[in-house]
Each structure stands twice: as structure tokens, then as C-alpha cells.
Amino acid sequence: MVKLVVFSVFLMGFLRLHAASSTSFKPETSLQAKRSCPYTVIIKTSCSSTTFTRDQISLAYGDAFGNEVYAKRLDNPASRTFERCSSDKLEINGPCTRNICYLNLLRNGSDGWKPEFVKIYGPHANTVSFNFNTFLPNRVWFGHNLCHGVSAP
Ligand SMILES: *[C@@H]1O[C@H](CO)[C@@H](O)[C@H](O)[C@H]1NC(C)=O
Image (cartoon, rainbow, N blue to C red; front, side, top):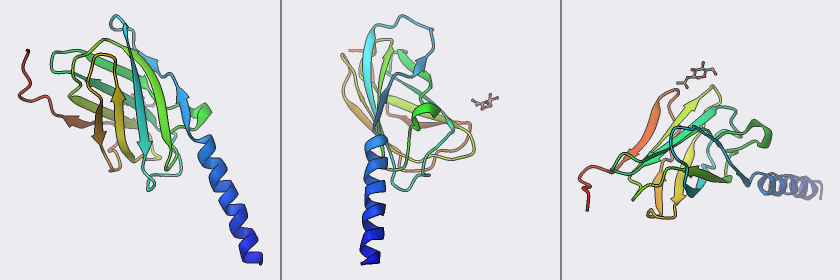
């Protein structure tokens, strides 16, 4: 009986944590270029990541033609982003790209963070998903580049 109560309390806490950890926010972006395209970025944090992270997270992605979207800070200490098992939805405005073929993340801090995947929906670009499933190294850009061989139509 006691065991059951303890389990229920644990489960309630667990469910509440997850309800609270689905956040949606607009990260700070640099003012380097005309901002004309809206993107929705979904970041899933692995269930084997740290409980949460206070590290600074930056994101950059783009196409094979030099169009790049850069978000200096995705983390938001006020809303505890990137908690273990959570999905974070970001609305980013940036330069318009054609098909997105690379994506890199930069982590800076001592907590650590293990993203599972980053998925991007853009108005003129393909919907892409980049898998990570690994703890990010500290203070180096880390990601995927599939642009090789892409040429202008
Ligand atoms: C990492 O964070 C520290 C402290 O905020 C900062 O001084 C440093 O420039 C950052 N390094 C990178 C690669 O972003």
C-alpha cells in the first residue's frame, strides 16, 4: 500500500515535469541579414541526457548556396529548456534558404546535453531532421553536413 502511494506521487511529479517541459519560445538571433523567413525548429532532448542543462546552446543551419540561419542562444534559463525527454519548439526568423543540408550545434557550459534530433520546417525549404543521439562536445560546433554534391538548379 505504501509502495503504491509512493509510486503514484512519483508518477504525478513525472507527468507534471513533462507537461511543464514542452516549451515554445523565440531565441535571440543575430542581425546579420534580412530576416524574411519563419522557421519552426523542434528539438528533442534524449531521455538519457542530463536532467536539464544550463549550458549556452547556439544553432546554425543552411543550404548549399551560402544562406545561413544563425541563432546565438537557444537556451532560456527562465524556462528550463532542454530537459531530459522534452521537446522544445522554437520559432526562428532568418534569411530564406533553399533546401537545408547542414546543421550544427554549439554547446558551452559544464552541465552537458544530449539532443536526440533537430527537425526544421521552413516555408521554402524541405522539412529536414538531423539525428544526434550523442552528448555534444564542449565549445566546438558539432553537427551534420550533407551539402556535398548539391549544385545549383
Ligand atoms: C563560452 O562561454 C564563456 C562564458 O560565457 C565565454 O566567455 C566564451 O566566449 C564562450 N565560448 C564559446 C566558444 O562560445
